[in-house]
Image (cartoon, rainbow, N blue to C red):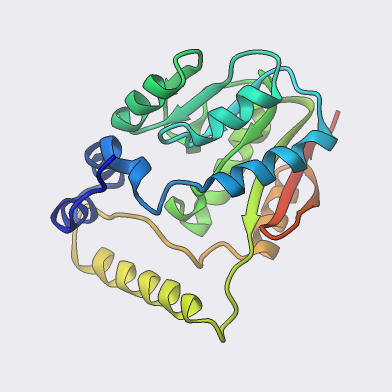
Length: 225
């Protein structure tokens, strides 16, 4: 698959999040933004000690990378939710067995329906003040005893060039969103792990972590049963 051109990426970046991903969807899996396979494999390995699972939900499924993980980890076909129709179309082509729902992740339309929820690479599309409604909706979607598994990669240290690249990207996005409408919310450094653990706990989860050697950790948030 051929990746998007610089012009296509520029058009996406000047659109809303929803419209931008609708435009990018056909080529998304050829971009660096797709969750890499080693990260998905490490998540599967870490999840095995917490299963078995019956029904799984992939929050902000995109083109369906997380659906592949759920298909291996759950007894029933997975559900994916996203608000981009273009991304859901790609997910449906890749995972025809999945149940796909178009919805805003900040207002999930599920009630005690799943015993596993995952999300890959989506937090940057939510402002810090939106984490609580996001996490509360996931908590509500889970059955008692169900878990929300949130993979967290190893962030670069300030001595690494990637740290400053990501910091510069966030600064550029803040400037873009200050002068251009509609906003395109995508930040890399607005969700430090202590804040994630605090907010998950506040909505009612019991939170722990499982190591993913060489990759990071899996944040495991369990709904009290």
